[in-house]
Every structure is written in structure tokens, then in C-alpha cells.
Length: 331
Image 1 (spheres, one colour):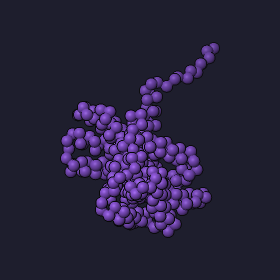
Image 2 (cartoon, helix red, strand yellow; image 1 turned 90 degrees about the vertical axis):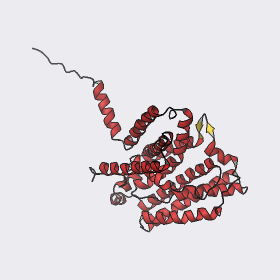
Image 3 (cartoon, rainbow, N blue to C red; image 1 turned 45 degrees about the vertical axis):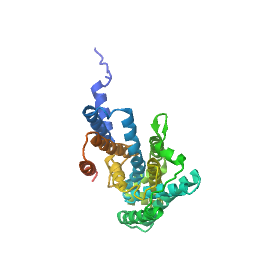
Image 4 (spheres, rainbow, N blue to C red; image 1 turned 60 degrees about the vertical axis):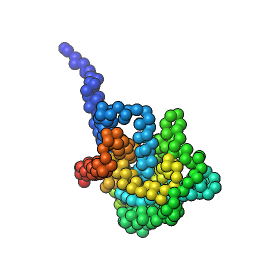
């Protein structure tokens, strides 16, 4: 009488690769990562300048400002909101720090004041949207105009010069051969990822975006969490704005103008759903990286500014279409 012996067959290499690919494809940021890799390979073939260390550091520094602010936009969008004032807030924070520094205020006080200005605008946005139930689009659109007016009033139309070298180093310096803004972006990204994945606050943020009524019935203090989200978004925008001003070396009233489009686009391109409840910190960073690589590549290929604007607009539209397609099964 024969006895059957059961043997557990180890999965083949093809099965392992298929599972790994499936797991990767399900991540919100997978599209942005693949796009960066594909465009990077193309540019490496099309021009010899793209893969140089100097150019890659230039690209990384360039999108770090957008990526830091995009982390805040990611938080807001995950809750089902939007923040159109982020570009103006970036300008306000940078100008506040530059103005105080140029007038003899200490390095630390100037930085704290700039950060406080951004957080305050974010708090006001949060109070209006969360506690007064006003539409985030209209509230932040109004704040965009208000804060931009404050930016012009601070400078009087004249660039602010004489900024403390300690502040400009934050935007222009290097540590171990890597630009300081990139280090700050990485540190903030790691910290925010831990918050979103390992803390109750992060779970609440996703819960509100997934189903706000269910979150409220589960005991989540929705208004408090949303107000905190907008405040954090303002703080992150302030960090990006201060670094941007430090990079320029002068305080310009136009600093941050138009960045709201790049910041929101970076979050959406990185997989943050406009319907809320889905996205990742890494996705916001990869979305900003994609915009940075596309811009750099168009410059290296000698494409005119007009076509560059068109190309970025098409990337944003494509990201919205993908977001719509991704949200359809859930609906």
C-alpha cells in the first residue's frame, strides 16, 4: 500500500516577481515612481548632461521646496479638502524671515517668526473650514489673495536684501555633498510617514477622508483634526517658503507665486486621491520629483518656456485622469 507524500513546492522566481509587482502597483505612488524612472532613462539617452552629479543635485534641490509643501497639501487633500493659499503662505514665511533677519533680528527668531506666520494662516484656514463648515476651495482662494497682498505690503515692491548668511545657507548650502533642502525634505518625509502610519492622528486623518460621518460616529473629533491638518500644512508650506527665499538670497514679493499649482499637482501625481482617504507622504515627494525631472529635461533638450508650461499642464491633467480612474472601483 502506497502512502502519498505531500510536498510543499517553493514558489518560482516568476511567482515572486509577480507578487512583488502586484504589491508595488497597488501603492499610490507607484505611477509617479515609474514615470520618474522612464523619463530619467529617456533623458539619460537623449542628453549626456542629465545624469551628471551637478545636474541631479540641481534637480533635487529644485523640487525639495515643492515636495516639503506638497506633504502638507497631501494631508489636506486626504481629509477631502484643498489649500489654494499654499503659494502665498510660502512667500509670506520667506519674506517674514527675510525682513526680520535684514533688520537685525537673530537667526533663530527670524526663522521661528516665519514658521509661525505660515502656521497661523493654516490655523485660520482650518478654523474657517472645520468649525464654520465653509468650503475649503473658497476659504483658501480668499486667503491666497489676502496673504499675497500682505507679501507685497511687507516688501513695498522692493526686494529685501542683507539676509543673515546662516539663513541663506539653509537654501544654498551642502552637507556631505547633498543640498541642505534635500536633507530637510528627507527628514520631514520620514517623520510625517511615521505620524501617518504609526499614530492615532494619522489614522484619524485617513478615516476622515474615507468617510467623515463614520469617523465622527466612531468618536473622532473631526473639527479638531481638520484644524490641525491645515495648521500643519501651513507650517510645512512655511518651511518650503523659507528655504526657497534662502535659496534666492533675497526676499521677493513674488516668491511662491504659482507654487500652489505645483504643490497640489505633486500630491495628486503622487497618488493622493482628490476624493480623500488615499495617498502617501512618499507619493507627494515622488510627484514633486516628477515635475522637477520633467522641467529639467525640457530645459536640457532646449524646449522653449511656452512648451514647458504646456507639458507641465498635460502632466497635471493626466494625473487627474488617473486619479479618477483609480477612484472609480471604490465608488
